[in-house]
Image (cartoon, rainbow, N blue to C red; front, top):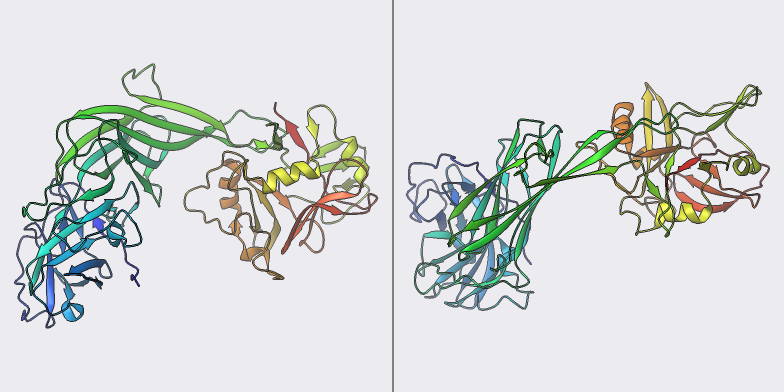
Length: 520
C-alpha cells in the first residue's frame, strides 16, 4: 500500500542553496543509526535540485519508491534540521544496486506502460498535468520527477532531475485584476510527457528526445488561483517537460478577471468575466534535463495598443442561465415579485428579501394564476421542465445549485437556494461545498448553515459573480415554494433536505414568484 505524501516546495529563481555539506555516514551523531541521507546532484540536503539554481525542499512525509534488485518498497522522508534522510530498516540485505524514484506517481506499478524499474533501463512516466500552489513564502509547490542510483549499502543517495523546464514569467499590465488559471506548454514536434526510458548504465541519466505523440503537452493548474493585481501582478511558473530537440514550443496562459456589466434596474448587479488567453510559440534549441528556458509573458487585453502581445480577450455575461436544450437564456429579476395595495407590481430590492407577514398593502405570496398573468412581454416564470434543466442538466454547467444560509445582521438570517449561472467562478477565498446536493445523506435533516453559510459581504461578492438566491419564505424560513406557470398546481419546492422541480400544490394556495427576463 502506498503511503500518502505531501508536495515539495519549489523555491523562486535565485533562491540561495544551503552552503555547507552535512556529513552523511550512517554513524552521524545527529542522525539515527541506519539513516540514508538524500542529496541531489551535489547540492546540500534537504534541497533537491530543479533547474537553473532553483531548488525544491524535501518535506517530512514525502514518499520515495525504492527498488533493490526485484524488491520494490516505499519509504517516507524524514527532515531533521538541514538534513533529509530515509531509514534503511526496510531495505533488504543484499548486493544489488539501489534504484530510487520520486514522486511515486512516475512509477505506478498499476500502469502497464511502466516496467523494469529495478533494471538498468527503467521506464517511468512523466506527468502531462500538474496541480500546484504557492506557499506562504511565495514558492511554487510542485511535484518534480527525480531518480537515483546508489551502490549496495550506500549511506547517501544522490537524485537527478529527469525533466527540463520552461519558466514562464507572467506580468499583468492589463486594466483588470486577474486570477491565474493554468499554463500550458505544447509542441508539434516533440513528446513532452509520457513514458520515458532512463539510461542508467552510462551514469549520466541519458534521456533521448522523442518525436511528438499523444503526450505533446504539459499543463500546470493552480489549486489556490494566484492573484495578479492590475498593472503590477507577477508570477513565475515552472512547467516540467521531457528533454526535447530544437523546435517551437507553444506557451499558453489562461487568466480571468471581471468588469462591471451594463446596468439593468430589474436584475441583480453583476460583473462580466474577462478571460485573457495568451498564446505564442517560442523557438528553442535542445533542452536537456536540468536545463531551463525563460518565457516572459505580458497579459495585455488591448491588442490595438500592444499589437505584439499575443493576448486575446473574451467577455462572458455572468448573469445568464440556459433553461432548455434549445439554448434559451434568461436573467432572473433582482428579487421576488411583489404587489402593493394600489395593485402596482414590482420586485423586492434584494434577492433575499421577503415579507414576513402578508398584508393588504404589501404581499409577495400569490395563487398560481398570478404566475401565469405575469408571463408577459420579456418576463416569464420558468416551467417545471425548465427548472429541471437549470438545476439538474449536466449540459448547462457543473456548478448548478447549493443550499445556504445568509446572515444579514446579528442573529438575523435567511435560508435559501443559490443558483449558479452558466459562466460562474466562485470568488477567491469564499468556500463553496455540497454543490448540486439536495441533502447531506438519505433521510438527513440538517440546518441550511451545514451546507454553506455566508455573511452579507460574502454574498455580495457571489452576487456580483452572477449567483442568484431564492429565499425559503415559508415554514419558519425552512421551505421555498415557487410557482411554475398555469393552473396545474406544480411548483419548485425545496427545504433543508429535499429538492423537487415539480411538486404538487393546490393552485389556490400562496407561493413565491421569481420572474426571469428572456435574453435571446
